[in-house]
Figure 1 (tube, helix red, strand yellow):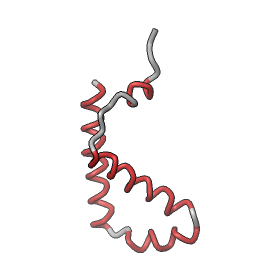
Figure 2 (cartoon, rainbow, N blue to C red):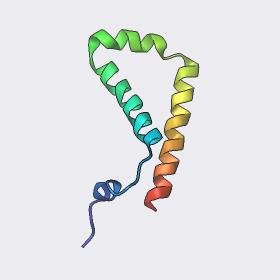
Figure 3 (cartoon, rainbow, N blue to C red):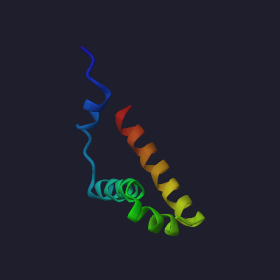
Figure 4 (tube, rainbow, N blue to C red):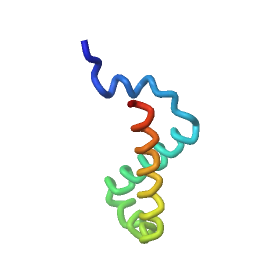
Length: 69
């Protein structure tokens, strides 16, 4: 029997730095979801800010991919 893909993710040993990063990126979702935060969030989303987080997300994705293969 194949286990669902997401079930395997619960077996990962995430380090504190990974958890903090995921928490930080999750805040972006909350900030754009609520109108009061949305405009403030857009103000900090400069090109440098966006490129920085885009690269961090790509790095985390590559690390995550390497852990589940």
